[in-house]
Amino acid sequence: MKNKAFLILPVILVLSLLGCKKELIAPPVHYPYIRGLSATPSNVSKGGATTLECFATDPDQNTLSYTWTSQAGKFYTDTTFSTETDTVNPIVWKAPDSSGVFVIDIKVEDGTDGSADSSIAIPVGSYKLLEVLGTGVLTEPMGIFVDGSGDVWVADAGDNNVWNYDGVNWSSFSFAGIDTLMTVDTIIDTTAVPHDTTYDTTYTEDSLSFTTPMDVYLDGGMIYVLDSGVDKVHRFSTPGPAGYDTSFSSISGSNNNIYPPTSFVVEGDYIYAACGNIGIRKRDLSTGQVEATTDPRQARGITFDGAGNLWVTVDQGSASPPYWIRSYIKMYDQNLNVDPTKTIEASVYRPWGIAVGPSGNIFVSQLGDTATADCHIAEFTSTGSFVGKWGDTGSGSEQFNSPAGLWVTSDRKIYV
Image 1 (cartoon, rainbow, N blue to C red):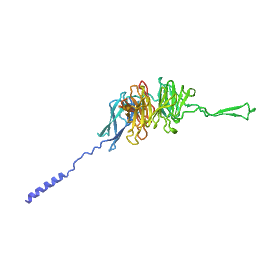
Image 2: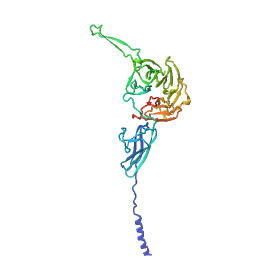
Image 3: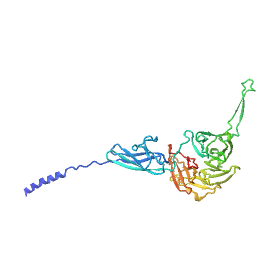
Image 4: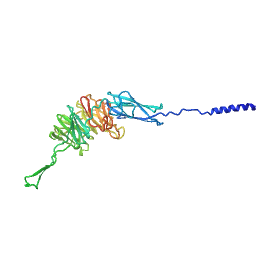
């Protein structure tokens, strides 16, 4: 028995030693991680551009490479569109000349067989940016009107002027009437000999400038300017002092001008003005009488649709999200009777300008603010269906910074 035990022991020792051999394990693979994607602006018009950026990290600190792909459009290094590429980050994507929602994919690789993928959808609107007007000319443009010859008229509340652009040149005027309280002083130069034959005549400026021109409108060959700062509409036959005709006061009728008018239209013998918390006021140009009033609290923008109907933006937004909870577009007849079947919940925060296109679609500018950082133009059908929006907050050519006045021409050109 002792011999058998002696023989078994070495076998057990050998097996134990073999069981302690270390197993070889491959090191873990750390893939890149995409933390997010951004697009500035987040949506563009046809042929527009947005800057895309991928935010990615690699646990192994490997150098990352980027490859972008899209359904349509092209990638460039910058907005000069001179160098086409799909491997830089950030990158500029130029949208195609077609509308829709386009998905852009990104593949991030770390050079060691590790990679990560993600994508972002970019809405491309139905409209294409044609031109940027007024750079270095306009200060705080509010109201806009495009006449039958294609001239663009702009009420600039920043420099208290009304501007005209004839397709080549900009010109302006700022004149609100005659100061009836002017004084004329005759100063005799007593140092002259004889002093009774030499004198100077001085007098105060006999013209008043616009205070806060908010809107401009042309009708019947006359130019109308809404001067919100003094609650008046001034009428001219031609731009400037020589063309001054008359002024219509108390447009809003507000004591101390607490609720100044912000937008207006002229139709026949009447002015229709959106007057904030007072609502809409209809004023007879011949008698000055206020024919009718209505009370859509916080009326902002107003326009005619060419069929005798008034469309008004009403900003009764909530103080907290969703901000547009009480934001509407309302339709009135010329007697200011509202049609409740045409009321549209605009879902637009701080709606301002409004225009009706030749097809009957309604365009609304969202003024936005720094809290929402969402300035854009929204489009609705006349029955209230949401068509789409374009634009974003910023200073780029495809972006807006407090868009106010709107105008849509018969050939579907939109001026903002």
